[in-house]
Image (cartoon, rainbow, N blue to C red; front, side, top):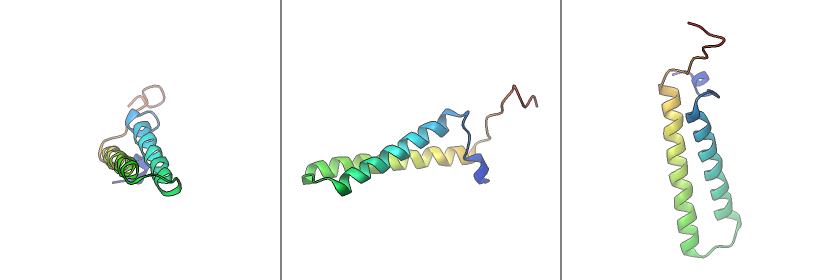
Length: 76
């Protein structure tokens, strides 16, 4: 697997993975830096872990699949 397959700005999976990973980072920051009760910490932490897992799965799919070809500049 080549890491150059990860950067695919024409593939919607790339942007979904970036947004989910950014959201999980923001949720983790909220849990660490804001005073929350135990239930709120558990809920937000659960969302952060789920977002990280789904984002990692999307990144794995990007690395595994063939990159989307640009038909305008790459006719082959």
